[in-house]
Image (tube, rainbow, N blue to C red; front, top):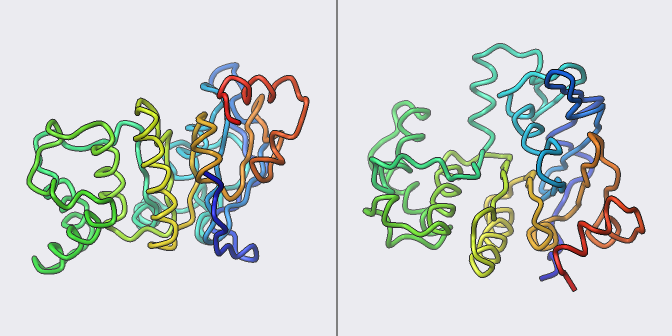
Length: 257
């Protein structure tokens, strides 16, 4: 389950975050964090529930506004651009939601076609068909094209959600708890798919999780979020080579050998 080496350009940060702060009422969720995501990298943000992991990617995608700090994504300052520029930027960012976010009233085909038709003006039926077939093949679910989401398993819905994200050829992927609610075997399949997406589509990704198996399998680098700040960053082994009382129980609970 060791992560295979990736082609990472450490001279090219596709996301650059500096002194990022976010509070809700009197609760300081993020307390001045710095973070870079490099071209071609899978970066795992690891932490317990409620530590601000999902808040972080909502800030990156412009769904939330920071209290302080800067967020540069693909050369654009997310905190300073217009709504139109933000919409254009979001097309270059794939967001894989925890609940897959499929439309229950649409077939798999229609779910995949929807973002294409909405964002690619003038696209032909042939181009739509090719794109749908390509992403379904990438997630290994070509046979589900005419099925409804209610006919799919949780793991299949997760895969289709990733396929729908990929159909616009995003440069950055944001995964929010990609293995949440899945059985152990399906978790491994989703982790492998995340790595396949990285290799096949040359994406750079932030993977939000509290699942150590997911972190170990997918992460080129791990950033441990504790008490509103990144307390430890590095490889999986480097992050957990510590007696820190906040980190060790997290590892022990997950029973990874």
